[in-house]
Length: 272
Ligand SMILES: NC(=O)c1ccc[n+]([C@@H]2O[C@H](COP(=O)([O-])OP(=O)(O)OC[C@H]3O[C@@H](n4cnc5c(N)ncnc54)[C@H](O)[C@@H]3O)[C@@H](O)[C@H]2O)c1
Image 1 (tube, rainbow, N blue to C red):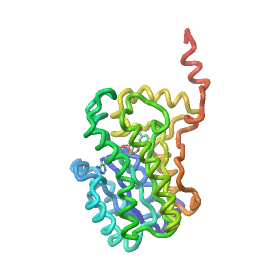
Image 2 (tube, rainbow, N blue to C red):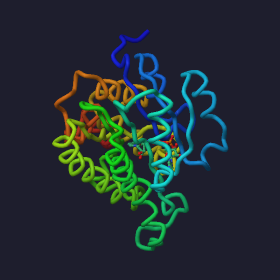
Image 3 (cartoon, rainbow, N blue to C red):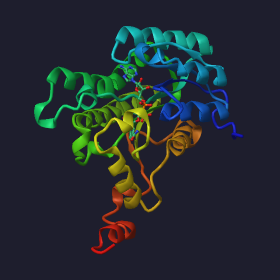
Image 4 (cartoon, helix red, strand yellow):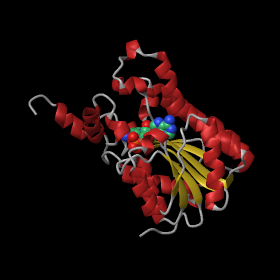
């Protein structure tokens, strides 16, 4: 049972691939809280057909869009406003993909065409979404736009490869567009930097199980789950966070400010 935190609010949710996706959990929570939305994903991801289950459950329509295509985004946003019966109050960008990571290319042997693709899909697409939304004047005053990031934007994680650069771009776009959209329309723009989470995108990163375990031991509250992330996103879409903007919000159980923890000391103590 929700608390109607998003009653009357309309939006678009990008990136629900399967029931593990952060966007999937978010759609369920937003629905529970009274929000209505359009679901979207890349046409290629639709072929798996899973998103139809989520749409049926949430009474949502699905509009395919490749988030790197301005044309697709123009269609998505204008259609969504029509379908939902008014301008948008929230947008979730929950998109990440690196061909270099996917194909196991070493960081010293990157394919630069693929690197540009990683930056476009995982970073620049966030700018494209907002630029199209602004041009169509599709977002209501005090709307909230969110994207998902990872701490590899600030610190190195070898297996994360060029996704680290993509996340830095993403966080920077949130600040720059947040400044612009705030002044223009009182729209806020933030990223949530989420703990490692077992999803399709997460598990594709080399050594994922090890750093899931490391992060768990390094976080006094433990890793944040996809469902907990969805709850945070709901609050960020609600009217309780109207003056939070241009932030990269750490949602990581305390990982980012821990030097070492008792759990890690115990694990690393010789003889244990
Ligand atoms: N899983 C983690 O450990 C973790 C940690 C921090 C941040 N994140 C971020 O969370 C977000 C969601 O990922 P997830 O973990 O839920 O994994 P996921 O694999 O379920 O979601 C990634 C989504 O991106 C979509 N996508 C890829 N290319 C696209 C394109 N061109 N156009 C539109 N959509 C496209 C995929 O179809 C998929 O639905 C990503 O930004 C990811 O980087 C994940």
